[in-house]
Each structure stands twice: as C-alpha cells, then as structure tokens.
Image (tube, rainbow, N blue to C red; front, side, top):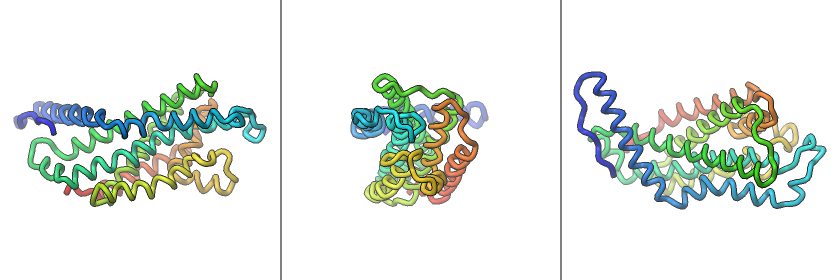
Length: 265
C-alpha cells in the first residue's frame, strides 16, 4: 500500500524525524486512496451542500418567520448542513475504511513494519476531518451566495464550535469502528447511529424550532449542543459554554471508549 522509510537510529532527534517521515508517507498514500473514492467524496463534500441547496429552493423556507425571531428557515438549515458534513465524514465514511483494513489483516501486517497502525489511524482522522471542514465551508459559502445567509459573525466562537464538533463526530466514528468486527457490521452500526444523529443535528426539524422539552433533551447530545453553539456564533454571540462543554465532553468520552475497545486485529 505504501513504502516505509528505513528504521531510524537510536538518537532521539533522528527517531522523531523518522517517525514524521513515516507519517508523511502514510498520509500521502492514504490521501491518494481517499481521492480515488468518488462515492465518499460525494457524500462528505457535496451532499450537505446539495441538500442545503434543495431545501433553499422551497419558497416558504426563504421567507422570514416571526416565530424564528425574524429569521428564515434556510438560515437555520445552513448550520444543519455543516453538521451533516461532520456526520457523513465521521460516522458513514471513516469506520468502513478502518474496519476494512483490520478485516483484511492490513493493520496486523503493518504492526511488523516500521509503520505503526497508529500512523494509519491518525492519517485517516486527519483526512476525514479536513474533508468535513472543507464541506462545511462549502455549505456556508453556497448558503451565502445562493440565499444570502449571513456569514458567522463571531468567527472565533464559530471556529471553536466547529473544531469540537469535528472531534465529536470523528470520535463517534472511531467507536463505531472499535465495536465492529467487520466492514459489513461497521456499515450496519454506522447506519443505526446515523439516523438518530441526523435527528439531533436538526435535519428534519431545526433544533431551534423544537419544543422546549425536546430541545433541552437534544442539547444534551453532541450534535444538538453543536447546533446551538454554531447558531449562536453565526448570530454574533459567543457560544454558551454549556453547549461547548457538552460537545467537548462527548468528544473526550467517545475517544476514551474507542481507545479502550479498539483492536488492531
């Protein structure tokens, strides 16, 4: 799959340099494979923008609504499109790839070479994280150009919320991979997790439009809290620390579960 550099000497500096060289080789190889998967690229990068564009074509979604504080429904669906990009990348795309590597024995064989399985895991997380962020930026740009949805007014707060959301989505995907022995099981478990996360992200009903009791319940989930944090930053306020804290807590908990349950073979 890729060629690994020769083992490094015992000097700490050269060991670090060799490790970075190995990681760059793994990242380069995985990037090439990632770009050869048009299906994954469509669902991660294009589908959230396509869905947001289609929803914006509904005339009533472009009209201001007093119940929404003078905003339009499409204004609420741009953050939903951003969350959908994270979900597609972390839960639907990444787990089958890693599980497939494990099922075919690639991770086991890799453990006997200078390339450690952790390098592959880090490369996959980095690639899918970057793809999700690029998709989120595309949703925001198209929402602005096509429907005049305003850009995030509190950019720093939006960036913090986006990074925490990405971490939560990838950690959830890592858990799906950790509990799935085969690629087929990973796809099935990912689908089971996919629909509840779609609901909590507000795909069918924006979180801001949910009844109060339901909204409070949804806000306790990573994507429900993220939806509120992104929406607040988009309107110019700093996201509530409770929403950022919930998202960060889920990222930490899910990462711990994935690290504990993950098996290389």
